[in-house]
Amino acid sequence: MKAIYLDNNASSETLPAVWEAMQPHFTRHIGNPASSHQFGRHARKALEDARERIAALLDAHPDEIHFTSGATEANNLAIFGLTRTAPGTLVTTLIEHPCILEPIRRLEKAGHALTYLPAAASGSVLADGVAYAEDVRLVAVMLANHETGALQPVNALTQLLQGRAPFHCDAAAAAGKMRVSFRALGVTALTISAHKFHGPQGIGALLLDRRAKLQPLFFGGHQQHGKRPGTEAVALAVGMATALQWSYDNLDANRTKLLSLRRRFLERLRADAAPVLLNGPETGGIPGTLNLAFPGCPADALLMKLDLAGVACSTGSACSSGSLLPSPVLAAMGKTGADLLSALRFSLSTLLTEADIDEAAQRIADCVAKLRQTAPE
Image (cartoon, rainbow, N blue to C red; front, top):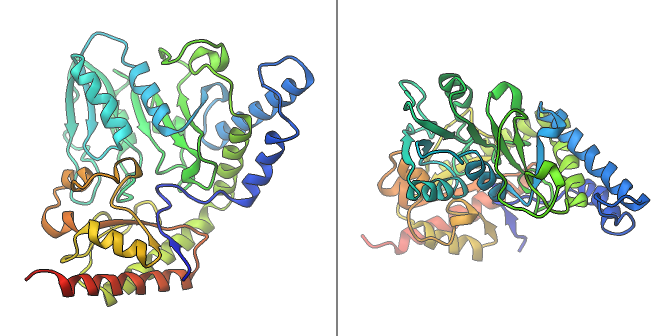
């Protein structure tokens, strides 16, 4: 039985072209980019070329790109590095990823006040009526939600802030799936993660406005202007740049295919596994992301059945998937009952075929039917 992978928001398959671009830097081109000999110079050139490519694609300056080990490190660096001021008010939402909420709650324990912007049932934060406190120190709102695919009104929120405080945007769920302009969003900092768009695991980037003052989390090196010291992973940076370039080169075609696969998947489930409830936007979100509830099927039990049936999905973000508690994202959207307790996230990839989608939908429908038959009255 072929396993079908529908958890691409957790991590996606590294493209062959990405591996091909990285491979020489694991074998022949082994220099440290800080070294002055020819091996080091070759590594430095590859690193800076990757930085320039990423900056051009995301409408940023090359010196605003800071490579990290992934989105979690980048988000922590932004949140702690931009709030080295007297305690004040931090603004965020309850639909953020744990690597945003946990650092912010640590700052709350250190004396900052915390305000949550409300989210609508569709999964988008409500920007209307937002009034920031006089002592606002940081605003952190994602660009697209990792569980529902709902887009967030980042540009509207930055305009309301008018530069009174840093604005950090976690774009890990959006980058590679939509056009992202660091400049047009008007944010101070923005995070991306390579393995979300068919790049390698283990690398991300923090885009930081060159005018912003940021205190580093780590010390012991001069790399990346001292903001994120340590030897840069040249091969991974090359891989991230290659994957992001591929995503942008194929953005329209990928979006068209993902929307078609999403529509096909949802239609078959609604026909064969009804009732099926959609948590999140029907249209307009990140293509390929669906959060679906199957009343009568506890999410944890259905997840295990699907795993045995060869379908990989999740109950939420990979960082919190070990939890048996209902999704905080869905709870923040006002979801209750079956919408909340029987919800699974399916995230598609352009590497899937229509046959994969049909087979996955059939397996899901079979598992749902069996669970409902055994559910207590």
